Length: 264
Length: 269
Image (tube, rainbow over all chains, first blue to last red):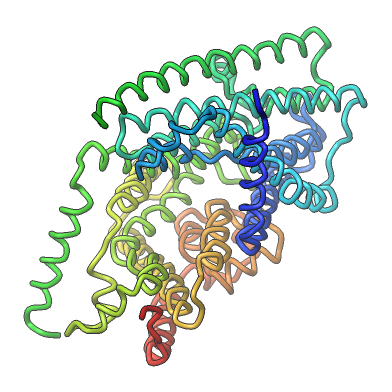
């Protein structure tokens, strides 16, 4: 497989993002603000207590800083395919001698790398200075955190991929995407650390992919998991990537057939 | 006011409804999506307070009650001020020039030619649900006086937020792009407003009281009804000021609009 055209798209989306500076600064500001709000609220909730259920305030802080930081990096354009179906350019896209899905990944990766350098890094520095964050449990755990975070991105990407495929059938995917984001926001731990979920919710969460996105890497970072557990959790991440991708791919194939019918 | 004004409003409203509810399934899905998106914060509060019982002395129902005012006022406000929310686009694509040519007041047209019903149903519906869940459980013995206070508070809250929208819309006459300012001064401030403001740093509290006075939309009126301990750090009079601030802010924003509109230059050709 020739990677050059994909690299070109990777670069293109990276450069595209560099064009809107003010917008960009605002989004960093919004990220920091969200982090700050949750930090203040949890300070009030803890009310000076050292720990609650074995979870210390600094663990909560680390959870917020890392999950919101990753959230800033994992920005995925949920309208990549819907826009192209909406304006009809999907037909020429499919004629190109390259994989459409490959292109989707390449452009998203360009975005992610841009976000990592220019959104995560500054917000992370601000957060560390203002709020503070625990160091990783060990250098090895830091490496495993990065590995697991990449897998977490994979999970989030496949979810977005599958939801985007509904654009073949729905006039407007905005509603679907918004509802998807509600699930991701609530259940992935960016707004409430999953330690504090009620027991019955934890049971439900086991059967969803959401805790694999941010929470698994963070647990690894904090050294909360034994080596065996790390292996299992990462395997679960891989499993979700596989399952959701297959579902999305089936929709993708059906959708293309339907598109041909429309065009004929 | 001309005698066919009501007629014009009627025709506009009919057209708006037709346009927004053209595709029924889509309309239902969209309203539901707005409802759920806004409910995200509520679900998070629910889970958090299941664990922690209270936030600065506010229990779950009191928090819902606090949130409900924020959503109710926005739901009503957006029915009237969608045109102000989207004013930047109206100016940029030149359709504002059409408004100028019509024999009706400009603000009148902006207010009545569009209304985001999905946002109204999503926000307003959520506000109503939260109110119904919490109103009986927060220890308020409702009587006519309190009901009146509540209604006046909603009107005040609508005017406060309407004034912010009008002010930001007016800035469009001077600056081409104000979305980022709206993000900064409206939406980001609103994120704080769902919580008892006593939780936050003093500087944030000052912002919410004196600069973008969201505290008067829900926090202080709720304090009047609930009398929580953390009211002690603020002047008593804050609990009675919502309608006056609403009217005052809207009057100032209106004068600013009246003054600025003379400088309007079309962006079109």
